[in-house]
Length: 398
Ligand code: PMP
Image 1 (tube, protein in one colour):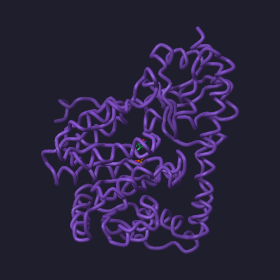
Image 2: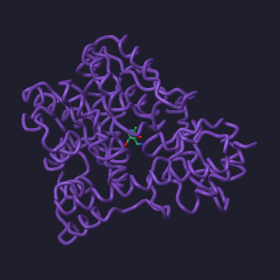
Image 3: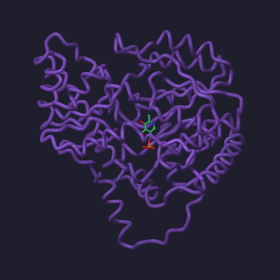
Image 4: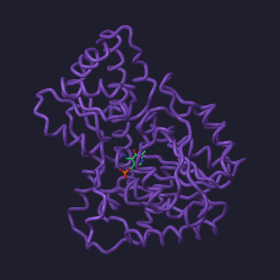
């Protein structure tokens, strides 16, 4: 009955990750998948999460379904985290927010919602992109296109080109923007560039879909939300997906949020209804355990303070590794410009290594990097960074 169906090739990143685990190389280094590892190479269990879980475990509670939109305390906390605790639109109830199944679930529900609101609109996504952006929007029936973003020559943003392409889009087009720590390049617009870009969104009546999967991993939780808050200040109507996968080290718990900034409380109420309808059609209601723990961490003053310190620590470690890689490569490869390690932000850095160089890194040195040349920086630590920069020097110095 299903013989005619094309075989799913699998996700190339997960495939490479599996190949890494099969490799017997004694000094192998995994820089493939976007997971934050601590300096010991472990995915951390945050102490704020551990305490929240211990408290909940004292008296296990029944597990009814959560409402379609998720826990009210969770949704409030998402709004405060994304827009800032004192943002007037929160008081005015102009933001419709749901608890989502990770950042991916937020993107899917948001894509369904936008397609329902504007069935003829199409979406423009950065080039290069996180591949799933294309898949999710196509799966929701939205045609996808790209806008210029990254310049491999200068290893920086093609800002002028991006601006002129956005200026030429049809009205009511959707534009996918990364709030911070762009995946895969690590290159973000500066605050000044965001302030130039936002009026274009307004003038052209473009609908921004902001993906904020790495809040707190760039410059700070508030700083990383600069674009979102500047769009809110400019009075735009837009959509934001946020994720707790990284900043709560909560990958498998599938916790995120979807917020739609509206013009009025009545509009937000109607939008929330449509988001709930989209949730009902997709998965009915979000996960209770992760939702409860996330809400506890964000709403309890002590746990929240501990969490802020833990996010800062993860951010500091990423910055340290970036600086260290840059410093070591400067010594080992004096002619090579490795400043991109410190200019790019967040989990990812784009090396520009060729397919052949990546193959040598993999086969000779056991250093695994995905085909685009994107490195997941937290795969590096004080024990393997010297080995990694030696391997880079071998490949690039050849
Ligand atoms: N957006 C981007 C840009 C991402 O990199 C990721 C995670 N890899 C997501 C969304 C999805 O986040 P989650 O794992 O919470 O579904």
